[in-house]
Amino acid sequence: MNTLVKIEEGRKKGIISFLKSLLEKGIVTQALVPMRVPTGTSFAYILTKDPNILENCEPIAPVMPIQGARIVSKLTKKGPLKGVTAVILRPCEIRALRELVKLKQAQLDGLLTISFDCPGVFPLKSYLNGHREQMDEVFWQAIDKCELEGARPVCSICYLFSGELADLEIGFGGITSDAFSLTPHSEIGEKALRELGYEEASLEGRQEYLAALREKREIKRKEFFKEFRSQVEGPEGIMSVLANCINCHNCMRVCPVCFCRECFFDSDALKVSPEDYMMRAERKGGLRFMPDTLLFHLGRMNHMSLCCVSCGMCEDACPVFVPVARLFALVADETQNMFHYIPGRDLEEPIPYLDYQEEELKEYEQSYIEEYAP
Amino acid sequence: MEFTPKIIYFLCAWCGSGGSETAAAYRLKYPENVRPFRVMCTGALDPVYILRCLIEGADGVVVSGCHPGDCHYNFGNFRGRRRIAIIKRILDSLGLDGERLWLRWVAHGEGKKMVDTAKEFNNYIIQKGVNPLSNRWDT
Image 1 (cartoon, chains in turn brown, purple):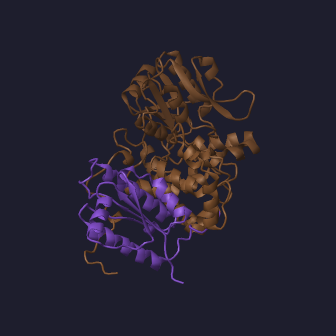
Image 2 (cartoon, helix red, strand yellow):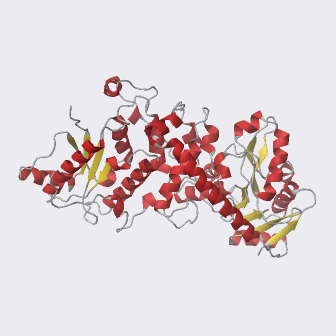
Image 3 (cartoon, chains in turn purple, yellow):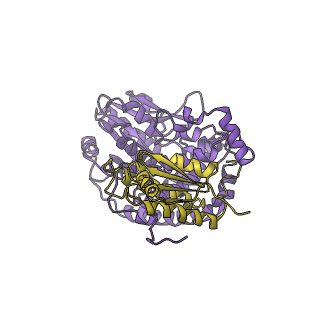
């Protein structure tokens, strides 16, 4: 049951009144939405039962200061919330959340997830240092064509930008600018739409519009990877990209799928004796401090690149402008392709590390020639 | 001066190191610069140790364990194979030479195969030369 919601005073107000009616009609008991922090310029999620507070919320923020999947994980890790919670998440946040559900770090019970055609977000640093009012305006204009000028680099090559994994999908692409579409993708979404009393409408041209855009992005993605790979390839390339890394591990802390309570790279396993450092320094002729920069990044890639949703949080959090998200997107594209795995796509699809096939990956085994004569 | 590579050979406790025992019984020799390490299972070998070897000075790493289907823990080597495949793919995609990591199954009785693998890999790495990551101080 697809629905078109006509709006008079702009899409933002339209979405807000849709959210308010969800609360007022008792379809959801509380809502978790982004909102501008009253004393600041950035955004934070707010959990509220009050429709009047929703009046001032920013359902679609132009930046992503925190990954929504982390918030939902925090809320539901020990069990579902009472009642039904409406939560607005970007497509990458939904995918991360579904990965966390697979990893038993979050629950979808009692959630009404709402997602939308995401145009991308501005890098947090450029938003906080820039002309914010102007950028807000640019952002809401960009929503019409799902394409944001000056977005995070990984946002501009994202090809999974529509919210079809959520219970309710808000659509802008291929829809006239005086309306937005609502498409349910689950029973709870359908029930909500019925109770709101929206009429069914056909969304002609929307799927074609999205498919065309997706194709365009995929081409852009391939081109980007080709170019970026030439920059980072080889020991020289990778070390030049990671040269500025200060080992703050911020990228790991903001990552939605890095959920481990204690990271191996923060653990005592890497706090070794002074003799060990001396030995390594002698072996290499000298040792960089802090050590283990490359090990940290490669180790993290190896641990979570299969679940990486390319949200770009890591790059936003990096204080020294290391293109972490682009690097991870490049590697994740390779490793996920090995298993034809798209994180978050299917809740029943196991994460490749937790699964195996008896006959597979023969090309990674070294074949043996019986009579090897050195 | 001829280049003597540093090679780490991870052997699983049941088949790989069994292979080395068989090799010993037949008095087979493998190059002395190949350093064997016994791990409980190829699936128990955390990829971070392989990475650490390759970053901190080893020129190559070989992993040997039970043939698929023979694992003492039923599916340890299947998981190990996925891990090693992923790590090879990551290294390749960043141009860090995933060929410096080999995976070859060695059963308990295959002493010759274990020794041959060590020799073959040693020669392969000698041809390849020094691991460029091993003597960088800025890693």
